[in-house]
Image (cartoon, rainbow, N blue to C red; front, side, top):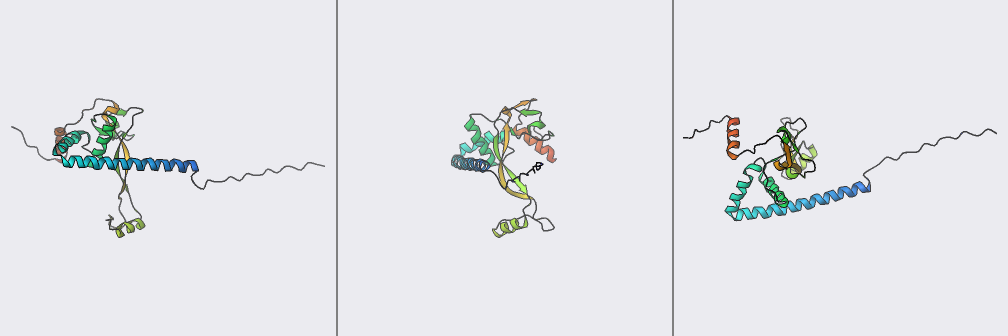
Length: 201
């Protein structure tokens, strides 16, 4: 009697319908760490702002400290950078992001490279996108102003903020970099704006 050929049974592959427990746990842990960091940032920000507001000398000191290294950042980011610098026990010099690959921005634009293993400083950066009509309607119902294009569509606008990395000059290597002085920054701004400068003497 001839043996019957065995028929191969195909295994049905089960597709993942969602993140695994490990992925969910990792995401939850990251969210907890982020919330803890946000609470710490807010508490430190409130404390520093109260100290500066209560003592004019503290305000002058703060202005002197951030006039250069944090001039390109908002007040909130300047305080945030100072907090992180104090925690690390360093005196900040000048902050820029890593830069795009085409070397058009950040430290790469100045032919400087962030050293391997350096821990970035964090600053708040705006998140810009075009909200949906449903989101725009919810915001407007809550009293929030929504920018719109001439055709009535919700325009691309700031919808939130996220923490992004930036690095101090001391964390980079490369070509010499001259930290701009306040006077130099003013001259550059006046020159780019085409505003005539007063001659001294």
